[in-house]
Image 1: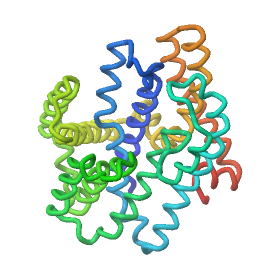
Image 2: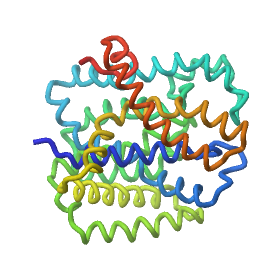
Image 3: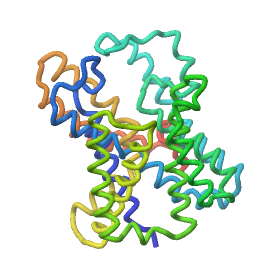
Image 4: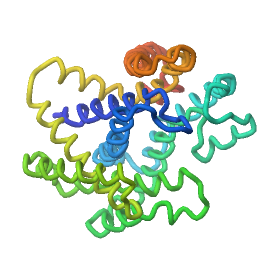
Length: 323
């Protein structure tokens, strides 16, 4: 029987993704003007993406059962096909709208899509997850505590080890830890520990202290970042597990959001652009832009995904779904 806790986890995480991306001046050179939104975004960014890598790692064994070659093929279709399709389709629009952005887009930079720098910057996740999945698939039989510790150290030193200064390399070296953590938890059947109220409470304390330190720029390499993210994952799973044992509309909604989280992730950042330009850039309506961008990005992304799923080719090219 499918554990709905993980769909709920993804549902919570995708709402946090859209919430964080909806802050009007999140990419502004001058920083976020509203301290409450700055605080909210900082806390969200301390753990929301690691949740997705953790879940992906936890379920890695299922597609890998059919063999490594099929695993690579399926991951290529699911992740890299929409990565390139959406990126290339979005490029001319990004070029036209670059005058509203903090950084101007150079048409000659399109080649960078091959090294993880997509015109739709948020699609880095698809590229990163693809390469982490393939690399870890080669090590899956060697997953043990030793590998987990080495993985943590690599994540901690991800910027130092990135000798070529390619941003995507740092991301891959950092986020691989959460993928391996999910795989490790699954392999050694440690999930029950994450259901404990005591573990959740301890994680909440660590999460709070970690975010306080990060807000004050206290971080040794990325040790605090990693520990804070792990505590955030634990709290998210605990909440998701509590919700999964109940009956209610919010449970159904979060499960649904978890199942369409890829749709929302792919389209939400693009959808919000016209709303942000009109409400914030043109009319100066800061909080109104934040609220409308959040609601519109979520609802319209789901609608776009629903429409694209109706056709085999659009489903394949834009969502990486064969069926």
